[in-house]
Image (tube, one colour):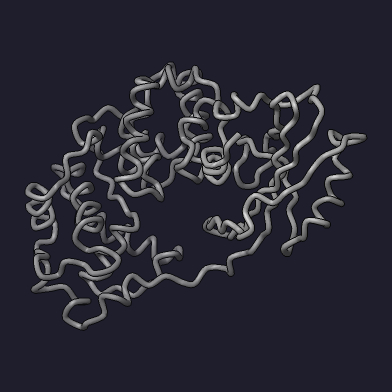
Length: 346
């Protein structure tokens, strides 16, 4: 079975027309790969267009304020990708004189870049013979060869990386890497793969043994944590509200949110009112408290589920501090907050 030739032939006929496939510019390839980490093409494409339009060169991205980058990223999630993207752009401009690193070993040193991304950029932009291994590749190879080694282990990564490296076309590594990723994304899908039209349906081990649904094997991850987020939306008589910047290394670092009361279980309006009395900005102020959503909004992250309520606090006094309600749309916020801002009638 010549998997390499079959994949490239299949790809030549079935590849999607995507903008990052019309360039070898490492800056554009890097942008596309970072955006598409843990993101479907349909969702990531508008962001790629937005970033390449607003920041057409690495110099433009490096000059931007982090808050502007985060705002443009809003809605994609996993915001550390945007922070690392911005930090690496500044590194390339300030330390490398704006010249993008041109080998796998140098590219992987960029913040936020791992083996897969470095391999993709090195092969597509610089024709380096280094195979990509991502979820699509794991899935395709595990089924074709019947490999049951768990993919989220060091042993699994080494096994699949070595196999992909033996298969890569040394004369056209970029085409092979894009072909094997496209194959997993469009044909050998997680559910309901199109086995009837698959070029490997006469030799696929998983199809022959009827174990397609069992591959690839992935060890169970840790139990997802459940948290209760209560956002306090303050509205003063002079049409201001309070936004706070999230600090530290937790979720949504450097994004803005309404003041938060985080608890281990749901709390009542009386408990929220008691907490609010400890807010310095509300000291000696009369306020009214109301719940915005009776049913919790469940926001699912990879490692935790946030059960969220928004509480509206109206104050018949002016704020000496705060943000004008008209300007809150300018701040980079998590999509959870962004959806609320969009739906709430300020």
